[in-house]
Image 1 (spheres, one colour):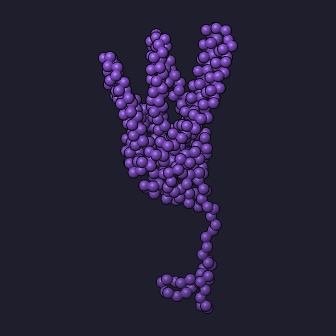
Image 2 (image 1 turned 60 degrees about the horizontal axis):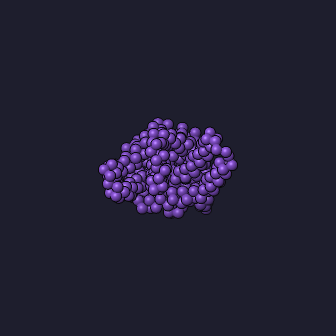
Image 3 (image 1 turned 135 degrees about the vertical axis):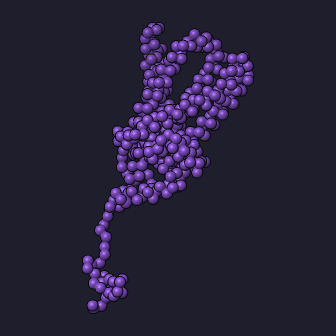
Length: 351
């Protein structure tokens, strides 16, 4: 056979002789590169996780903020109904407190502590939101948007597990508050005011620490149930195992992300609350003393304030749910090589 040419000939590995290529030089057809996702297919650094939470929030706002608005509207209505029943039940007692300045100062302090406690109790709702956002976060690695209805459909068979997991975490948070707050109530009933105050401070500190620690170790519960099709107990074990490997990194990311987003939301919402307060005060100041009209103005102002609270809480927890999902997938990429799975999926889609 004439002179061997590597472009037109090849070696027959059975005989060791050169032979002519039957199909000419080997070549591969051009393939388009896999799409660049919103989230990087590699382990993320500390601050990249925080930034990726905002990127995911902007990429699928209908899923993240939309779900949070629905959930927190219902949550706010529930808390409002409970608060109204409590006020009506203890109305004479509250009237006596309002007539005493010292008692009123203590009551306002307790109200602020109660608001803080409700905020921590609301962390249980983040598990449900993270479960809804998990499919959108996973699809965002391939730059694919997910709607709220698509995410809800993808949770078929896991919805009740997600709801029960959320109820379980809220029950744990509330149960810890009752257990750690019981000693101070018993001391108050026996007129041990000083000891009751000390017990309140100690119990509150212990409760805050326990709630933060437990919610951190089980932070990936909702995301694991949604992304890996797990039950509640398997999801608890999965979250415990994942958060144990990068405990301090996860604690820093979730704590700092929650704090910064909370400050940002408060900074944005504060002018609206101030304007509402000023307008309400001006309107009431120009009106004649009519109990019906003033009550109507107060109800409208209260409803607007509740709406602002629901919107701010929805935006805050929507970002927090995105941050939890990003941290969950980042931890899987760091400890299990999940980034290789994502890269392989993208290559299969591009073939």
